[in-house]
Amino acid sequence: MSLGVLTLPTHAQIDETRKDIQLNTYPKYPGPEESVRIDAQSFSFNMPATPFTWLVDGVVKESGIGKTSFSFTTKKVGVSTRVTVKALPTGGIPYENSIVITPSHIDVAWHTNSFVPPWYRGKALPARGSLVTVTALPVLMYRGSIVNPSSLVYDWWLDETLLKNKSGRGKISLTLLVTSNEGITHRVRVHVEDAGSGIAQEKSVEIPVQKPKLLFYELDPLRGPRTGEAIRNTFTLAAGSEAQFFSVPYYISNIPRSFQHTWNIGNTNLNTAGDTDPTTLTYRA
Image 1: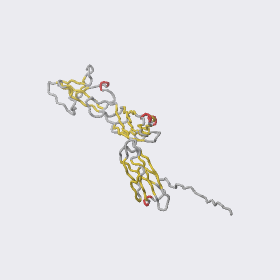
Image 2: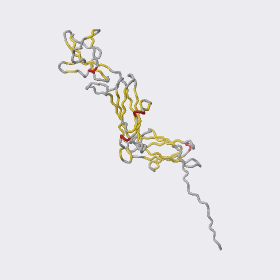
Image 3: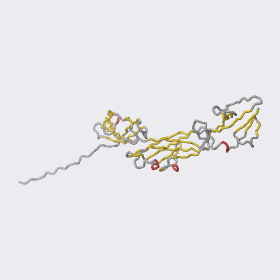
Image 4: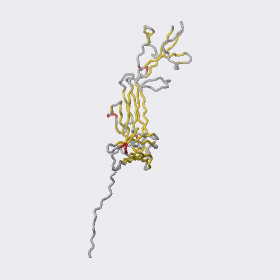
């Protein structure tokens, strides 16, 4: 009697789950503790008729037929969240895809070299000829540590133009010469990314270009400059009395004393060449 061994063909189990589901986040670069919407998109099956299941860090959060969108709140800076979507078309192969979101934060500050007087409480605004410096202050975390800002890659945009020569690794600041006239608002955008982890963030600021202006203030002999209120259209001075005025420019690209000053009363030019302070005028009625 002989024994024979019958060998049957065996097949390893193959995971046929497909991943051709595209996931898009809004906003594109989420910040910490921010509401984020994720949209799923695919052209491989009928999405409105397909059951979807959404999981956050492996825990089912929502499900339903045609549930192609899901919203959640991000964690703190540097703490990642994995969001997974599963789709099971009728009689078809299951689809699945995941996205890991690591929130980051960035501030963008800017200042200009245009002149404003010391008592002015507002922000100095740029005019034509001013220099504007924009600085990015990113907080990107990877594996529990803040990434050194000097090692990040910065892409700077002016309006819709990428400034290639001013972009690159460690370029946290951007300096621009304003060449446009007043009434124009420029949009500066910076995209910051850690090349190693792929964590990125971006932000933009608007910079309005102003027209330089010149205001007049009265000098009180006892109290000094009346800086609380500028002289607008008229100033009344009694006959035989005297008053002092000084001029203050706003948003010019240099200090006032460096400019030539010409004072006029009506159509009469006043010779102030010998005055020690060209910004001040003493007038006797």
